[in-house]
Image (tube, rainbow, N blue to C red; front, side, top):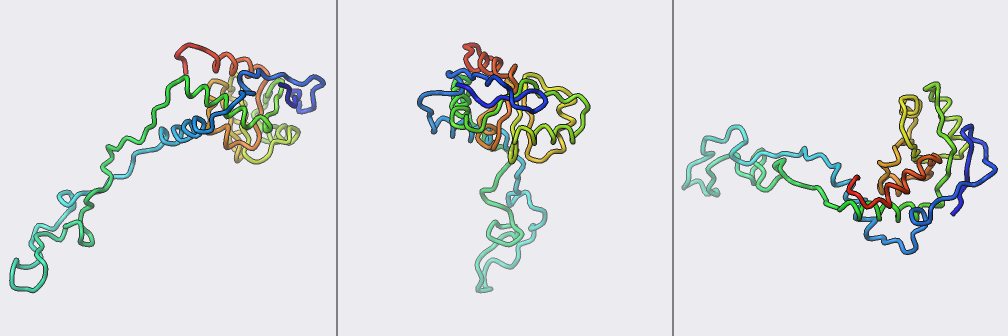
Amino acid sequence: MSVATYTKTGSKATVAAKLPKEVFAVEVPNHELVKSAYVAYLANGRGNLAVTLKRGEVRGGGKKPWKQKGTGRARFGSTRNPIWRGGGIAFGPTGNENYSHKLNTTSKRVATKQALTLTNDKLAVIEKFDIKKSKTSEAIALLAKLEATGNVLIVVNQKTAEMQLSLRNIQKVKLVSAKFLNVYDIINADKIVIETDAIATINDWLNSTGSTK
């Protein structure tokens, strides 16, 4: 499978890069597996910050609001009852909830291959994403030559400080190392730019039988 290829300066290369079919052209993508990996990424990154107070934890409410009988009103022993305004929350979050989704390593790798297959029309290969001066203007100019607009995912073999400094202030552009590629970033990208060296790394990583993530 060949794809549009660019030199490190952003001009069209004379020879198109070939992508391994076992990673970028899976025959029958499993959409349910891709969705599971997508949801798992979001769930595992969710912060468990919401905490509410039960009636026994709300300050005040020690005095009985009115006597038990003779007022014609319902019986209440505390103003911190959950049905009162300012009262405790009966079944609110405690901060101990576990929202994580488990997905084994093999399933993650298969889902990543299938996501790359589903989005292969967004792919472009660059010989080397070479940013030496840590200038945002240089990175913007290179992305313009690559026709990379919208949400742009840049996949490199090895991230450098120069790359990160030049790209961090550009909105909707994300830089990832090859082995940290994931379904969420792939599906959300409008353009995926991959370094030539990163292709071999991705192929070895996704077709590996080991437990390395």
